[in-house]
Every structure is written in C-alpha cells, then in structure tokens.
Image (cartoon, rainbow, N blue to C red; front, side, top):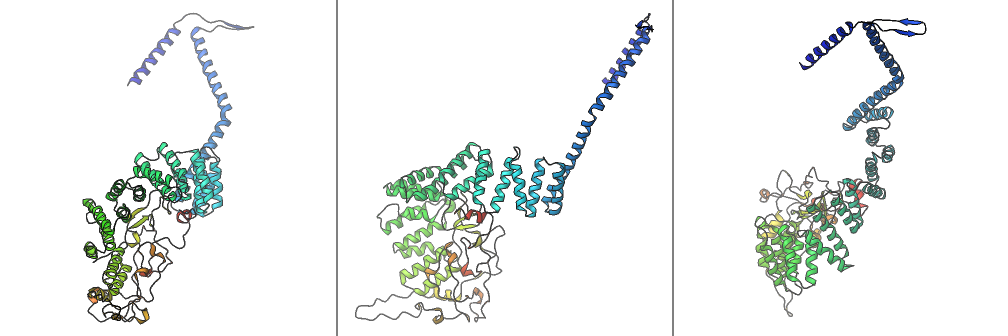
Length: 578
C-alpha cells in the first residue's frame, strides 16, 4: 500500500512540474556558427530529456559490448563448474555404493571440468582406491599434499596408503609431519602416539599426550589415566635396568591411576622392598576394590617378606573380605584364598572356598582341585579327572583388547593401536555358545570323581611298598590304559603339566585320540559309536577370532596370538613389536 501511495505522489509531482514548465513563457536561443535555433522552453526541456536518455542508452550499449567477452568467459566457467560439481557429487555417490566404473567416469569428468577443485582430487584418489590402483591413488594424494588447502587431507591419504603397503617408516614420517602441521589433528596424534608406544619411546609418547591435552583433544580425566598407563609401561621396562627411574615413574602412575592393576602391583613391590608394608597394602587394596585381579592378590600375600604360608593365607582372606558388596561372590578372591590355603596345607579351607564353583568350574578352579587331590591324598586318578575337566572348562578372564588375548598387560592394542585398551575380562571366543545340547562330563570323569580318595600307605624300611589301590591306577600310556572304556576309543591321559590356562594354551597339542562326549542322560545306556567330530564353538560376529586354518579340535583351541597375521592394522602393528 505504501508503495502505491508513493508512486501516485511521484506521478503528481511530475505532472505538476510538467505543467509548470509548460506555463513558462519565452524561448531559448542556441547559435553555433551560422546555425541558429530558438525553441520554446517546454520544447527545450523535452529535447534535453531525449538527449539524456540517448546518452544513457549509448553508454549502456558501449559498456555491454566491452564486457561481453568477460561475461562469455564467466558463463563458460560457470557451466564447467556446474558440470564439475555434478560429476563430483555423482562420483562420490558412486563410490558410496561401490560402482567402480561409474566412479571412474565421473572422476575423469570432474578432472576435465574442475581440475583445481579439491573435491575433484579427492574423487580421483578415492576412485583409484576403489579400483585397487594404489599408484594412482598415491599420485592424487601427493597432489593434494602439495596444495595449501588440502595438505592435511593429502597426508591422511598417504598415511592410509602407507599402512596398506605395510610401510611403517613412511607412515611414521607422514603422521609426524601432519602433527607438526596441525597438532590438533586427531588421527595424526593418535598414530604418532601409537607408533612411539610400539617403539618403546615412552618419553616421546608422553610429549604427544601433553600436546593432545594442550590442543583439547582429550579431557583431564582421560589425560591422567593415559599418562598413568604410559608411566607404568616405562616403569615395567626399566625396572631391571634403572630401578630409581622405574620407581619414580610407577609412583607417579599410581597417583594418576590408582585402579590400574600393573601400576598397583609394581608400586606395592617397590614399597615392600622399602619395608613400607602398610603403604603397599593400601595401594593394592585401592586397586582391588575396583578390579579384583590375581596379581593383586599375589602382591598382597607377599607384601611382607619372610612371612609363613599361614600368615599369607590370613592376609589374602583379609583382602578377599574387602571385596565390594556388589562383588561379594567374585571368584578371584576365592581362588586367591584357595591358592594360599594349598600353599599352607589347609586343604579343607581350599575345598570350602572352591565348593560353589566345582559344578561349573573354570580352568583355574579345575587345576586347583587337581592339585588338591594330588597333594592331599596322592590320588592320581582324581587329579587326572580334574585335569581332563580343565581342558574343556570355561576360560578364566585374561587381558583382552579388540578381540586380541594377551598373556600379559600391554599399554596399547596391537590391533588398533588404541591406548589403554586391555581389560581384564573373559575372552569373546570362549564365551558360551548355542551348541544345541549341553556337553556334560564323561562317564570316566564321573567315575573318577565319585570314587572315594584312597588311604595313603607309608612303607617302612623293612617292608616293601604297598600296591596302589585299584580305584586310583597309576598313569600309563594311552595304548595300555586299563581304565573302564566308555566307547571304542579312549581319551589320552592328560597330566596337569600339559594343560595351561588361557591364553598360554596356544601351543598345546591335540590328544592322541578324540575323546567321546556323552550327556548325563546317556550315562546309564550302553556306550555307542564315538562321535566323529567335536562340536565347534560358534564365533561371535564382532570377534576378530583366531587363525581359521588352525586346528578346530576343542583340546587345541587357540586364544593367543595367531601364527600368521594378515595385512591391515594387525600385521602393521606387529611389525613394531607392540
């Protein structure tokens, strides 16, 4: 509405001005040499307006003609830009759904229409990676690394290609250059930190960690935890060479991360050697409350040098009693008490604490029961039965990171290079799986465990040794075993020395004959033909697993490092000795 009113006002003013000019009397005289003109004032004003409009039109035509080549160039450039953007967009979409030919075609079009566009270089590199042309991908990433705006992206691509080629030296150099260029680059700082940890350069790793804190890549609690992990790793490496530096490092580590098990164990060891028993006990108790671990129990038992086995048992019972209420039935405390009770010859106490777990034992529980039978009664038969049960028992917790099971704690994961990745937990590969039917203990084990323990017969100097009772035959080779058969094939005799808890069982060898498993419902039936193969354990879908070419027999299940590692992160990190 306002615009209409303004327009009408302007028209009225123009009409009033025109009427005023038309009412003016007189004329305008113009002479130029012999030429003379004398129009009236209204005519002169009209001619002046027409002349001004003509000048403006002429100027517009001249400027449009002058700018026409530039406009044509810009129009062609805009068309090429639009075609290039179209090619880049559809090329990235083709890469997303894995169409190699379409991605290559769009990459060529993008390089023709938008050769200087950074996204065109990225599309060219990714299409080459999709085709498996590593040389072409490296050339594209080098071109990106030479540009100021795409330098970090080019270095990231070259780093990935170096990893794929297992070029550890080249990957380190590229990551360190990226860190110098941009300290806040997450991938570069993570890679350099992992490489320095793999080389054992703990001082360099601590410097990178401080840089990450300054750049805001990690928060304060994560920084304290990771710094404690690195200091613990340095202390474990230097404890045999420079005990002063190792002690200083682990003491700082246990302040930063008091629940870190290796730090608490090593710090308690140093305090115990310095006769600071009460301080060492407090360090172990703080870590035990967060994560009960057998190393903590062992360190707590031996915190005071020269103690008897009975005093160690009392100390371990005190530590087990401190387990939080939500972990009142934690098996680690009971296993620690049983271990100390066996050392103190308190076999009744050991049986008492292990009683809740003998129905479904873990490997360590079964081996402890075998040791109790062998040490207390000299019952070789029952000891062999418990040892045989340990072979098929559930695995105990172990240091696990990204599906990799290690026999010791490590600061970084050898699979992904992640710092503080190892956790004390049951390996994924050993978790229970749906087998269709529960495999119970064999009749041989049931018979051996149900038999009463034999009485020891002590032979004097004048008497000959008594014959061993029939219920506990002495170990004989598998070919001469006189135990009652449960099938056509008999299981080989397995001793306690041949069974190792996970993950040291990677080198174990299969028994001489495949054992026959029978359910509890079949114990009263005649023995049938042996099952031709052991039911395999189903692997979890997110578990990297073990070597697929290894033996699939249950007695030779491998939980440790595979014999041959493929390419990628696992093989790449293994070359650095992580």
